[in-house]
Image 1 (tube, rainbow, N blue to C red):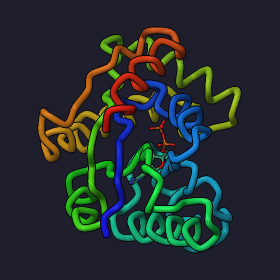
Image 2: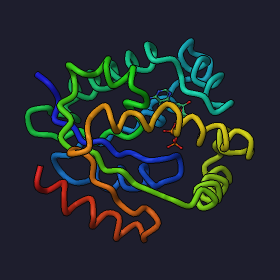
Image 3: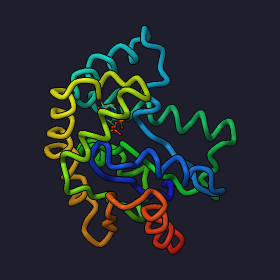
Image 4: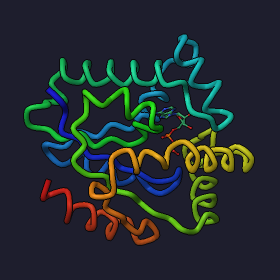
Length: 193
Ligand code: ADP
């Protein structure tokens, strides 16, 4: 059985996490931010060490450990009853993050919609990430060089995921609006899937 899924999509700093957290509080939606799963690992565990090595320089963690960790996270949440695939829709943020991951998850995810939070202004993204670095103590957002590398990685590796699922799946949303308006735009579509 495949999981009914929607993807929150967009560059680092576009606001996926903000929206995902709110959506996750609505009954029958289960929010999973892959970056949060990584950050919850013990830094001295084998996979925690791999995460830090890649994330701190703004690169993606290799696909196999990423997908395995995600699958384990979902299994644990199914077992504990927090995620019920019969009634819940997954709201994924940060996975699949490249076409290889989308391929690996082909038989697991039934993707119904993609909410593409667009931010045409690169400086705004950089500004948001730098503010977050201070607030949330995120090493990967601390230096301008790493931020730039993250944005390049997004353009090169993550953006092609949109084509993988096809245009008809994608809802473009202006992420420069207020968080409430972005949420309004997502809710308008998500209630129909
Ligand atoms: P942001 O929302 O700012 O893009 P995330 O919290 O989603 O950042 O991710 C932080 C870091 O975690 C990424 O830069 C990457 O190193 C790693 N990461 C998160 N999700 C994935 C994934 N699906 N595949 C590979 N690496 C990932």
